[in-house]
Length: 396
Image (cartoon, rainbow, N blue to C red; front, side):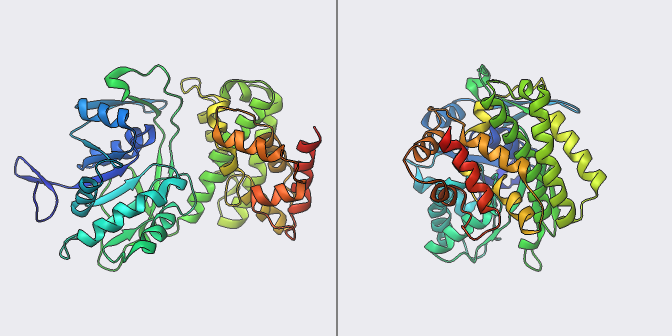
């Protein structure tokens, strides 16, 4: 290790280092793959002892793509450490790193912040700014992490860049090769990152697969309100009608109609708000439906529907577009219908589903529950219809 700049020297060449939080399927099969292909030495950080042990024991794993343009990729030359038990080592790695990425879930980001904050204090004053990109399915995910870091100390030595990511990783059951590290994933990918986070004179890093843009919001909302909304709508309506697989649910004319109704509503919002062409957005919709129903990427309604409390929250895939549509005088019956299906998602093995059902069965009234779960205030024009949806669940 080159102690002065924190890079590894291999065969006389300086290798940049990336610390990646979250060694799950998205972390290994998307973010780390692209960092590796860009010449970075990847240091995985995770709290899962078994997963870290497998990464430490296995010198490589394979990313198996499915779909148009698919190929296999070998990821090697990485290191791994337990971010819970090896915090000092983690801080030292971040202090020397060029970039930090995450794929841990938006709610976990505040727990990542202390190590980054400590590392910024220990970082050499002559080092280039640490680039931090939170690769989460959340609007402003990196902002959440940046705010948590700033609560703990100064952040002058870091550049925090928001991003939008899109790549479907199906259920990996039965994937036991390479100690269970291999990942099956779709070939399609989108990783869009905010270029404006970089101050004058600071150049974004050259990372394979990233598209740098000056306005990230249209891309974030197009993905969230199309791909995530469609996937979750199919999952909740599918589960409600007894389907196990997403592809089988979408094979039902009734559920396909429900999904298309939702996407028609979000299309109207995205076209009016961000200037996407109507034909362009319809093509994006059709591609999305092909992707999530791909028979080579089997996924279950139960897995896709996990975490309903987060998915029903104010800034998420159903309530956010519905609220904006109603604010501008439009209806959002398809989105509200999907909310109703989400309220009936009863999977005791999923902690959020169990919590949601407990709240709904607690005796609280529909208005109180609608406000608490979705974050929509009673004075908002969406609220009366939203409360009706909650009342229908309570009356069942």
